[in-house]
Image (cartoon, rainbow, N blue to C red; front, side, top):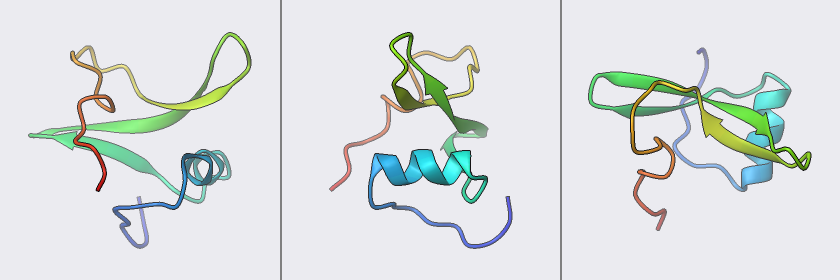
Length: 68
């Protein structure tokens, strides 16, 4: 990852678009483990954010604290 590190974005759609265009990279860091956030498609064709499967439970994104 190069460039500026941002800790917040405007919307989930901004994140989806930024990842798909290759403009942004997101990750979740927990302790020493860093896991990439990617765009996935539901079986209904809806795009959503998820982390690369790292075999850890609970889900990396769901375990993050609530945004203020």
